[in-house]
Every structure is written in C-alpha cells, then in structure tokens.
Image 1: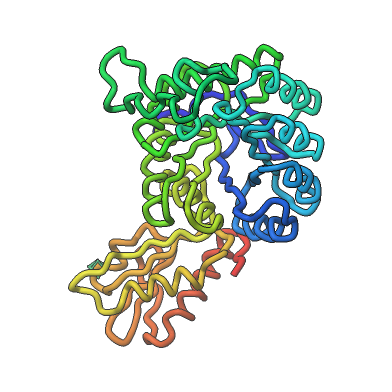
Image 2 (image 1 turned 90 degrees about the horizontal axis):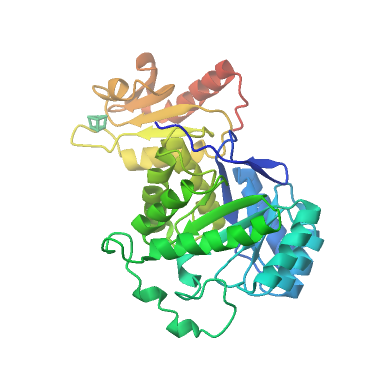
Length: 383
Ligand code: SF4
C-alpha cells in the first residue's frame, strides 16, 4: 500500500486529524439541533458505537445557541455545520464548538469569512472547508458574493471527470478552485488550522478533485461521497470512492453520508477502514457465501453470530462456514470459527479443529471459544 500523504495535523477537540493519527470515523446528527435532548441522545448512541467526531446542522440562531449545551453533555468533539450565515459561525464559536465546517459555495462574502476566521484564530478552533458539488459558487463567480442567480450558475453545464476534453474547464477544476479560493482567504489571515473536503455524488469527480488538491496543499482531508444514497447503495458508492483514495494514502477522516440512521454511517465507515487494514475495531466476521455443499442455512447462522457479537470490543476474527469439508481450511485466517455439519458443528481455531459439538450447542460453544480468544489477546471481551 502506498505511503500516506503527509499532512499538517489539526486537533478537533482532543482528536488529532492528519499527520500520523489514525483515520477517524465521523457522522452527522439527523435530529433538530434545537432539540438538545434528542440530539444528545443520538450522539451518545454514536459515541457507544465508536463515532469519533460529530457534526450538527446549524440552520438558525437557536440551533447555534443550543450547541454549548450539547457540547457540555457529550464526550466526542462537536463540529458546527455552517451554510449561508456567518453570524451562525460566530455564535457557534462563542458556544465552544471544536470545529467549524464552512461551505465556500454558500458563504461567499470574503469579509464575512474573514470575521469568522479571526474569531476562530483567537480561539484556535480549526475550520473545515467543505466544498460540495451541490452548492458550488457560480462558474466565474468564485469569491463574488452577489449578482448570480443560483439557477444560472452554469455549474451543471461543466463536464464531470471522465467527460472533460483536454484543457476544458471541468467540475473538478471548479471544485479545486473553490477550495483554493477559501484556503487563500484563511491563509491571508495567517490561519492554518485547516481541513478540507471536496465531495460530489459522482465518484470519479470526487476522486480526481481530492487527488488534484492533495498535491497542492498540506492540509488534512475529510473524505466523503455526498448524498451517497440509502444504506445499501450509499455504502457501496462510498466504499468504492473512499477506498480508491484511502488506498492511495489520501484521507485523514471519513464520513459515509447515508439516507439512514447515523449509526449505519459509523458502521459503514469502520467496515471501509477495516477492509483496507487501516483501522481495527471489534469483531470481524468472515462468512462463506454458501453453496450446494452447505449443510445449514448460512445466511441465518451468519446473521445470528453477527448479532450475538455486535458491540464486542476485542479484535477477534470469527468465521461462519457452511460445511465441514472446506470450511476450516477456507477460513484458516480466522481466530475462531464454526463449520456447520448435519446435526453437529466443528469449532475451529486458525483452521485447526478444536472440538465437535451438537448443532443445538454450537452458538454457546462458539461464544465460549470467542471469549477464550479475547482473553488470550488481552483485550476486553465486551460482550
Ligand atoms: S465453506 Fe462449504 S458451504 Fe461454504 S462456500 Fe465453501 S464449500 Fe460452500
């Protein structure tokens, strides 16, 4: 795997992003930020799942004013998501948030941005420049605060990554230029606590934009594919896009944007990082796809095992295989596994048979073995 891109780290609260820090998983609340109790409840659920940074929408002043109370009740760093009104950014800073996300397409008055940057600098609070395909400034309008109708911005006419002809100004160019415009505003204020994202729904466009900017600036990247979709399609789309960049060493923190509960975003984020061996977290399930040799209903068994070990803290790789003949060998990489047979099951460790149990006892026997492995690893079992 190529070496990770060298970046200048920033601290979002106590969480380091960039440099040699582990790639973090973040999410965004889906509650009304003004409803402090509901928002805190959702964040606490996400904390339990391992979410490392949380962002809240700030649609109005009441939402900005709720951030201080939310922050007091949670453990992970809080990011305020700001569009359109710079006063909301100023109030969020006064409320003590750990980071701001500013959308350069929606906050285009340089003087307003400067005011926000000055207060952020005074308080040493990082800013994420969140460029988003859906809210890019008009073509030829970067840095201009008025005079363009959102319906005449020409952004939709720009060619995407694979459509652009040689030398033609593309969406990728426009996203990178938008990011660089805001970076220069921040740098002009001698502010460098910067983190950047360049998200589009189109995966090649997103990847090209990040790649391009990676060579131009030293700041850490927040990766994401915007409006990726529902849990199934969106997780795949995000995994495809993020994996290309992560494998190239690009990316310091990730958010999987799904039309689903935020815990699905956190789970998907960790699965992506685990698949690339970039993070390790909890149980990893190896399960065979089943075939004509299977002696049991593998789909049910795999789901039952996954449910049983959900929330497990120790890093155990558990296999669920459908037949005794091929199962242990095919999953020899797993710490512990189960190969189901007719009326019985083999419990194996690193591909070697540990014991044979009756089918009715296989879940209990597997659990017992998982506990032993977890204890041997010296990690908390957590289940
Ligand atoms: S472990 Fe057995 S049942 Fe599962 S896919 Fe392999 S051969 Fe088929």
